[in-house]
Image (cartoon, rainbow, N blue to C red; front, side, top):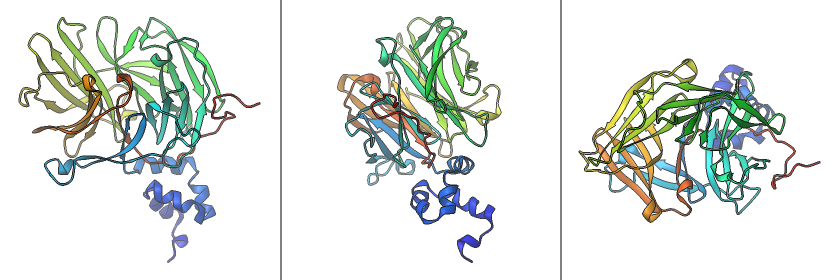
Length: 386
């Protein structure tokens, strides 16, 4: 039996499990497959089943990262290795990437020349997004990529811009819609909040670890379908500011299904610190609020760690019950990667990082994808074409 004689459903089932690199090579071999690989329904199924990879933003470049948790005690195979750098954005060879936000196999990149570009690293496809800042504080702007999922067969991508980290009572935000190729403003009456972590996009919506002016912490969600903010529960009770105690939190996505929260608490009086990680119990699109399960508690006293690790991003391996995180050592411009588990806390990588503290590294769990970027009438310089 040749492949084309297979039942249609079985053919789609097989192809949805083929890695993106191989599908890319198959596109020109068959008209039927070429059409299929652009079909939103097929791409949605393929992304959901794709074997996840790890990407890292370091030194203004995006790298693929090999993570070998099984070899954590091996002296031969390093547990973490930078295996390759993605080619520069094809529309601008010298662009430096300052920040990235992952969504559905696409990366939203903020560049050193104050531009935005949506990039599929595996197909090389890009779309430069025009925007003009109305304030001189461009570096404080937060950009996240999400999508309106009201149409299940075809996602409508959008970009949210927050002007500052601290949002007062009622604030104006901006949305860029790929379909209309334009920005528009909207007003939200949400209570004041401060974005304490980088946004994580999951199932089209974005989540932040957040606090209010009293120091009370919560998770803030932005729904790209309704274009509304909402508060979600934490796995612990937040009581607000406490003298001599520093608390931080970072969010991460777990296989495009769940959220994970890494929480650190440092007591300046006793020089004691603790790290806790929780994972949500249910798939994120099946719950109106969040319920959490304990995943890992790191006993810093056991490993004689008496400092705050300044975690910027992390990834969870539920099967091996381990966490990979990266932090920075600002005195030496150094990026460090750690692997922690129930009986291990080990630095596995360090390197001098080019750039300033606010751009330091980002670990991303990434699903290689053939998702196409809807193109607008914009040139690489960010100016509209007539």
